Length: 401
Image 1 (cartoon, rainbow, N blue to C red):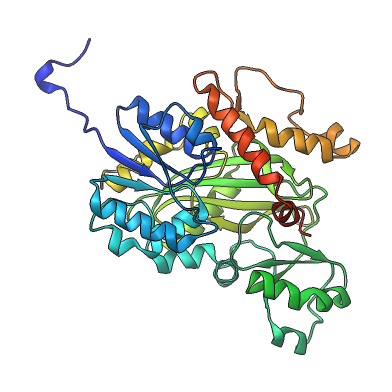
Image 2 (cartoon, helix red, strand yellow):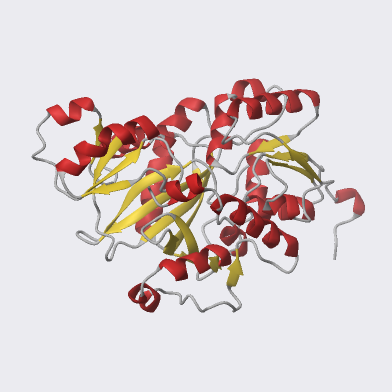
């Protein structure tokens, strides 16, 4: 039985701008469409999953924030100042930084879900984050700043192999393993010139070192309200990169560490915290924070958490509900990236991976982009993959060449 008409609350229909064309935008677009909101999606190419999706109410082609960030920022500020946009949402690293950096200007015209820029940098800069973790006894790899002075110091603490990575970067781009000081010194200048500031970390053995991520969401006061833990059994490239398959699990240790970290930082909105299990002491250690939802956030929607609705509530100043339960064992994969994993993995990887690569169907099995209700989105993703991987420079960056 429904409520009497006079007691029914009219749901406000919003005009929402989504700044990203990738697969993480798809469940947001679907949720907004089903709620009756008008969602405008920004793309830099027509060959993308969101441009092919049936759920955006409008698609705009803007300059890419990857190749022409200044042009994108100008387009964004002009568009929001000239059009009534209720909420502006970012689900990518670069777009989130753009919103955070321009937060005060944009808040005059639209509602946002990103933290202030000082907090944003503290979390997204890997050196600043590792400094914070080490100072607050949060589990993480031993980390040092890699600069010219580093090579003048005492390296007795340093045990090879080590991992070198940019302080700011996307995915595994620029992440390199070194097995001796000679190779490190030989390539250091080149890495610094190409990627900027660097850090050096102890290497955590990959054998037995399962990776995880905590998909968290904090309210305006910086209190974590949602923390969903995901196991990541497969990656492409297979040595470590973008996860191709994810499974929801329960892991109190990771949940508690995530809450301590984000509450301490005063984070606001979505954060994807990456962990690796150190087989030497069986402790899950923080690797980095991605200041946005994970690329495979569809798993959260499938597990029963509507992250799109959480973003709207935060943007509009509504109370964020505390969500302590979600569907465990939800298995969400990216078929196209999974095929690449299968082609490049060895027989031992294929034999030992769980869940099995060949588990394509089941009640709790989902694909990040392929679905019957939005069939053309998968085609858009496939075409975008062809476009990206036909680029030699993209291939080299993906495989650390």
